[in-house]
Length: 134
Image (cartoon, rainbow, N blue to C red; front, side, top):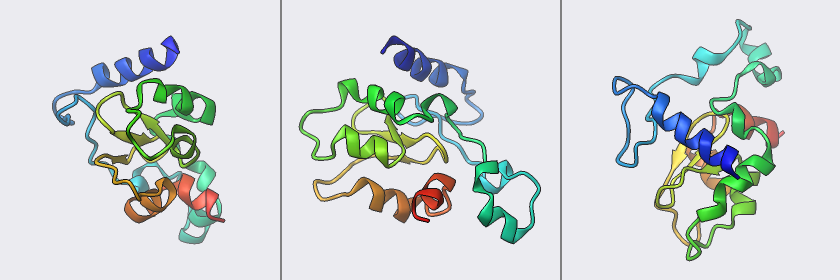
């Protein structure tokens, strides 16, 4: 587990103030997903989403994402297993989660929010979402 916490700590510390931080010190990014695409034509981009690089490669495995939920608030209806399956890892702050691939973050989860539905709704261009919905 220390590796997961070390990675979260490292991710927080390596960010510069020019990139911005939210109130929990989590990186706030303003880059386009397209900037991570290897030079491919439009149709090839859809077929070859594996050419996109993960924003947080440390959390590429579901098991590592799941370990990040060690301190997930017990009162939350969303289960760590479901969140990890949907590509999210826990940031360690409140109910804030981030997608390991697109870097999209979600917070203020409501009781009836489904992790996959929320991922698709807010980050439909995420390569992980596209891969899983094939």
